[in-house]
Image (cartoon, rainbow over all chains, first blue to last red; front, side, top):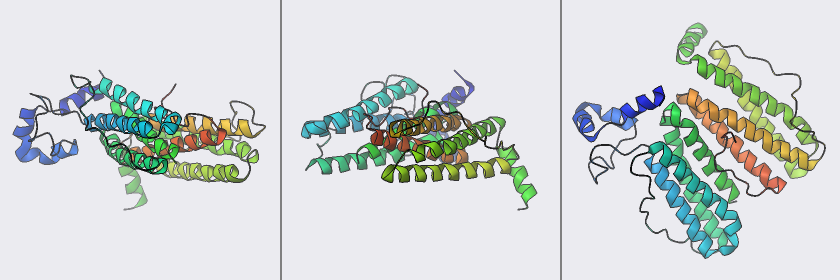
Length: 167
Length: 157
């Protein structure tokens, strides 16, 4: 574990520490992407706050599921879409390694609606989903500690390339 | 803010490791600009235009790096008069292959820069990684390579 990892681990505050700091530390919490969801609603776990890269992993699974649905609806696109689907699963796997802990299983994602209409519309929907996911990943890359920046950067770039490959 | 004060402030914000990766990025951009010369002459029409616009982006990034390093008070190594190509470029397929190769290499250098940079420098490095990776995808498509994408752009194989 490098110095960056250690510093980063210290940032992943416990729920108690977060609540204690809530009075004065709201800006600090926001800086580490710990705003809103998961803090006071739901239960992210007994002690640990969710990893900042958790949304990235969730998006990777969600995108893989969207590609699954698109291939079912448009089997002729399979050769084009399957490598991209595999890339999202590879991202999820790499992120699970970095995030660690008990959350390495695929999360329950709502069953994605198969992209409707013709193949062209399906590709456009996938492109839009990739674009949204790229935006989320970009923010996370800019905030990431040194030890995680390269992995997250590759995921940002992959999502951009997928949009190009869907044209 | 006077030039001197600006320089002092910027220098304090940039550490040696950031300077090292930005200097490496400068070398990679100069090599990419050079390589688009032999690539361009082997391509026609759309692909030739694509090579010209790719080269222009690399020049813009190179110029920005020169300014950045100069502002930080760091040395700015000049471009070499020539760079060794990894294989001979004598037709369209080899030109397209080199274009993919050089964008992949440049992407790798920018990816490596992410860990050593913060704030605006990291933002620039990420933007550069993204557009190198996207150009590599376009060149793979032009070359008929499938798939056109790689799972982790810029990651050393």
